[in-house]
Length: 137
Image 1: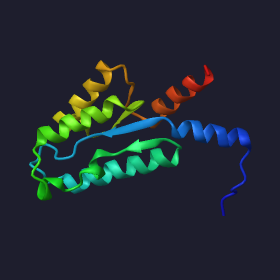
Image 2: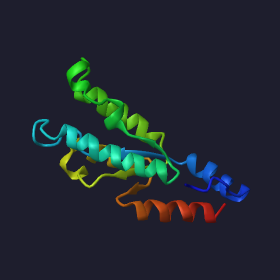
Image 3: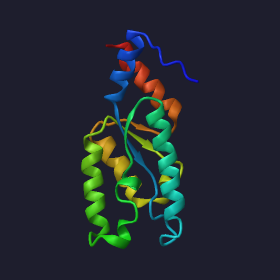
């Protein structure tokens, strides 16, 4: 059983960390004409869960529009434009291992960089960045 007793300092740390909004970027459709959609959604979901459990607030577009390619009349560009708008509102972008299989993820990464939003390829990079930010506050 987890110990639910935390200090006020720990509580403040958690509350502040929740304010750090992370966008998960990676392949959705992939380069195999959609054969890997379910696998890619699962990978993104697992990363989002880990990031939530580490205290971040997470946007996972894979889950936001899961299977919309079957149910929605929007086209690819609609999602990409929308996703890039979401990226611009985030504090960081976390790249999944499969991001290079996706033109969209490459564009999301470029959007982040062009807008001064840090891009992370590992949890360790993200955690180190966050710790460096709070050490200055």
